[in-house]
Length: 401
Image (tube, rainbow, N blue to C red):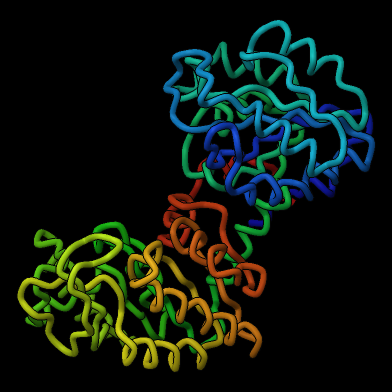
């Protein structure tokens, strides 16, 4: 059921309490990737442009409710947000529940933007304690969830706070709506051929995703370390590549289910291999078919990339979740970059292309192709769970249209 949008409610003169996901990488006080902040701008601007005031809640890292810790402070985020909005952002205190925070929220005027300190400094956030939730809920006239990256977690600011605001408007932000559209609605009845690209380390992380999408998919492309569990399940020698021995039966089951459903699983036929897991790789060579003893696969090979590219560019809907190799190291990045480039070609030809967050999103950003795709998710674990068809209670309690 479609959720009520922040753009459809009257925010004039109202204080809008928005849960955003500003969990961004910060090194020595510098934000190295501000994408999650930029993605929240449309919702923030929608409110301030229509005469509302914005009160922002977010977490950063895992401070575990132990009070203020400088390394997890959102202060650098407030500065970056101010730069992006070209206006000052009020950052009232080191505690999202203290008197200074409450006073700043109460005093917020139309057009003001307040960013509260890291909600995970508060003991009540992880457990959603009633007193904490009531305190935070008292700040706003309207609740808005725009934090897809944590929508799969029933933390206080995601679940207990909007529950405490029952009777007031509880709506979805523009980023959340976009994520729900692409990871939910667009995949309910995908245009065919529908291709799912899976990578990363573990088969175990993707079992539910495969079971949810396999009945709809025409093709499942498997790369990354998880491919070696599938290959081992088929009896292919994979050298010292990473194999989840405890999930060989799951891999066999997926192969059988795909065959029964008329879905083709595409596995690597050649591999960029190395003698050691390092940036240099020690001895590096391409192995066709089986992998030599003493070597491990760290990327798909050129023949595999050509085959995968043909499948991707011939598809009408593509979901990508997981890299093809250790793309952070130049010697093992060609496969992931090649898949990213194929997605760009498919998008230009009219396909709907969806990147499911996490390492895939990082790769899309690294290779400069994120803006050339239909949608790149801001969620890692959240996108994985949504692709697996797991319902989100934090979304369910928002108002329907």
